[in-house]
Amino acid sequence: MIKKSIDTKAPINDIIASRWSGVAYDSEKTVSQEQLLSIMEAGRWAPSCFGDQPWRFIVCNKSENTEAWQNLYDCLAEGNQPWCANAPVLIAACHDTQFSLNDKPNPWGAYDTGAASVSMCLQATDLGLMTHQMAGFSADLIQEKFSVPERYLPIAVMTIGYQDSEENIPDAFNERELAPRKRNPLGENFFMGKWG
Amino acid sequence: MIKKSIDTKAPINDIIASRWSGVAYDSEKTVSQEQLLSIMEAGRWAPSCFGDQPWRFIVCNKSENTEAWQNLYDCLAEGNQPWCANAPVLIAACHDTQFSLNDKPNPWGAYDTGAASVSMCLQATDLGLMTHQMAGFSADLIQEKFSVPERYLPIAVMTIGYQDSEENIPDAFNERELAPRKRNPLGENFFMGKWG
Image (cartoon, rainbow over all chains, first blue to last red; front, side):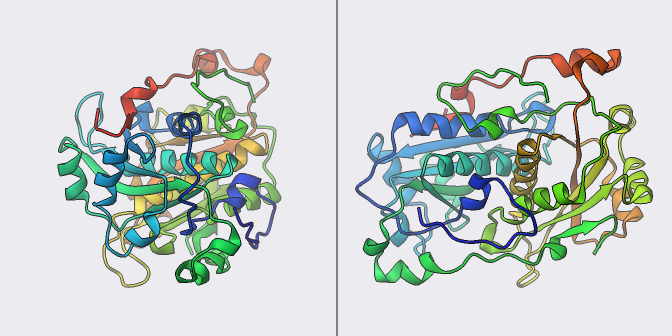
């Protein structure tokens, strides 16, 4: 995918530096089961509180599970559907709200699932794939369509696929896809020894 | 650090495969500011809902901010203090409970902060360092000692440092440090096209 430059005060690993959330997917290029296995394994080995692994991912590969893909697509917010239509893989990330060990509330369910999800994104980046997580979807609809048990909450939907070649990016996505990446200055979120 | 073998159905990136949460730190080896910058930058470039970057990290490097390190150490659960005593860096991960944009509740604060934290762990792994996140600490005490504003919640404390050489690992940590890594079988947490 397109390499975007980022400002850093010290060098970072290439897959962490190269991951960014594009919207222009190539609908012709599929993602293989082997690639998805690598991506899922990357999530599987993420750390979690008490090793509870509160994440549950529903992986919908359009070329393998067309109906499931369509079901998940139908849960997306209208604003996200145009660009998601070309993504060959949609994944619903859900988290357990209770510890599997003792059914008590797990306050780290979302935190740990965020770690698993980004590990999957980084693995996908390593495979030359583009990922994009979104919050614009109906969690209720996912729970209904996929019969997700009540204790599990859908918290994000992830797209995976190959980025379209630069000359094929539709005009509608062009500005968003080519915009520079931005973050707060380091000192706004990272404090040395004391708050702020 | 010690390389542990893991079972995977497909290959994964080396820094994702190599990261694990040890307890036997080498108290003699410090972590440099340059290394911490790389680690913070890795977190800084993590994805977040609406790009809100809800994470706030209080970084306490014992060799630079001894008092802050001690303050954070004092917030840890008794069970964690023995092994954390040797970790040269302690970091409190906090998340904003509201969007910075409009002060509305942010349901992705913990999820996004989990992504930033594991990105920092992976960057540390890439630098040859060991990390370990824990939930055993007093969030109230962190808020009090570091004057954390009420809208931010401490959700994890991370240790960073070099692992002790294998022959120096204290008996008390030996079993835990050398135990094989374990995860659920892939199919328990990753579903293809339908729940379960």
